[in-house]
Image 1 (cartoon, helix red, strand yellow):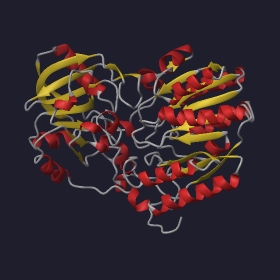
Image 2 (cartoon, helix red, strand yellow; image 1 turned 90 degrees about the vertical axis):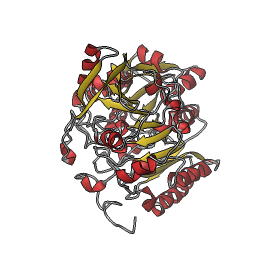
Image 3 (tube, helix red, strand yellow; image 1 turned 90 degrees about the horizontal axis):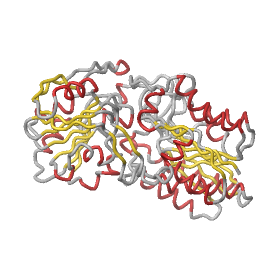
Length: 493
């Protein structure tokens, strides 16, 4: 058989001012045709798992596109059309099934339901074509996404270190279906919960208990896959929020039963999905008491991996004012500053206005650069291959990058591409050994745990500013369905 394997991934923050055009996809890790096959075969991605499974079964694979962009604002029409047209043209050319590696929270300027619209278009071209999809744990599941596929699954980990495992699981379901060995049926539910991302770590409650129940469901011989999606709360559209789905082998009653159990548990734990804030001064006071390192400080309101601009300087300024030393910051997005440091050269002392180049009108925040003086320590092209447990083997690019060393051994990584620091390669590619720093200041939420969580003696969340804030009171939700918890204090699902 001819099996279409494609990847189209973007977590859209509708509050983010960062533009999501085609260049953003292709610059970070975008490939077309045979280049997609070569780039992702053997990597720790569902796309790579799909290739291995299909080829092992003797099928021909077709890889029209594999592209992902760092989270940012709504996807531009030309970017969405380019990516979806590659997939749809391959379907028109003739394939027997589709294995798709999607995110599940893509909002384009032309459709709020990026993945659901793609799947619907595939089925218009080839009604009834078998389709399996792997989604991110932060997918906002919609009716179109469910109705227009054969089976689907989501990651059970955050950080996402089980991509190959879940891709293989759902890929096997589809291949078995093609061989007549199973008949997938699905049941899904969407309680009115807009969970917050900081409360979705798989080792933390409430996700820990929900994922355990998914694994219990999968021990039932009638169940092929069970998933709880935390959802992505910064995509302001009608279907944003948490959800559950169960895939059974021909037994709708079994799927319904486990769906109901998961949905009920999610609703019962809704209060645990709300993050409680703490003044930055209190956290930094605690940081002063730490004797050894590394200690991780999270600038989560400017998290690149949720659509942050990565140039909000509020937390960095507070850390400098607090007098913390031996700090490595990853990372500030400022292409203009990188060019200035390249021109100055390694070893030069430079004073510049760093970051703060991006206004955030959705939250009424103007960009405010921070004046810093330091020595240019490193200049690189920003490319490295991920060696940690998430995105293993994928080559990524921070763009041209620099390290500026400030007094007190404070090293700031400055990049020309947005990149969340979830892998130690962010540091090691620019010559910093993170295990030997006292403080690692990261523009991240949970993903840092994949490559650097094991290093931390202590971890502190610093509640700064930015479009990935966990403070719902400053976000102007216009489209999300209402009532929904915690925007509305409701007691019944």
